[in-house]
Every structure is written in structure tokens, then in C-alpha cells.
Length: 73
Image (cartoon, rainbow, N blue to C red; front, side, top):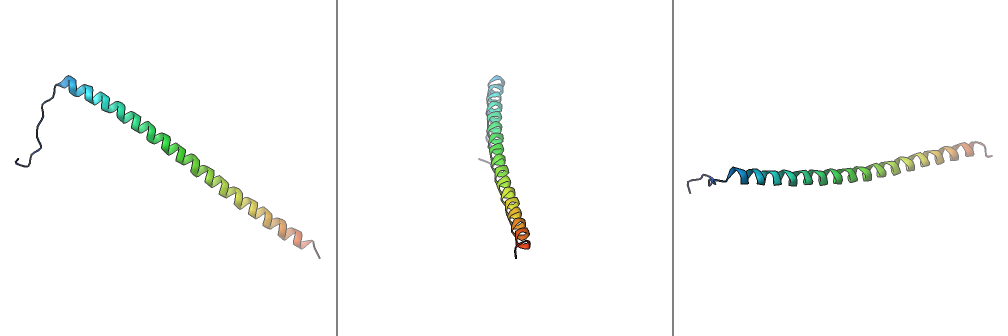
């Protein structure tokens, strides 16, 4: 070996068939990756919504407590 990669001679029809199969596999992998990313996005969106709801609820509670304490003797 003189440091070169081995050369292989392949029939062009066979090469094209393998490339088509690889393209189909690549499409499936991209589809799965996009589905996973979409699910992660939904989870993150849900978590952010829960946090916003908790913050708004806490603010409303604090406003209620401060307003009700102003009217008590």
C-alpha cells in the first residue's frame, strides 16, 4: 500500500441503483429527524406555556393580596 485508497470498478447501473437506495434511506432519516424535532418543539412550547401560566397566576395572586391588604384595617 502506498497510501492511496483502493480503487473499485462498479457497473454504472448497479451504482445508480445503490445511489437510489441511499437517497430513499436519506429521505427516511430526514423525515424521522424532523418528526423528533417537532416533538421536542411541542414539549418545549408546552413547558414555556406552563411557566407563563405560573408567572401570570403568581402575579395575579400578589396583586390580589396587595389590593386586599389595602382595604383591611
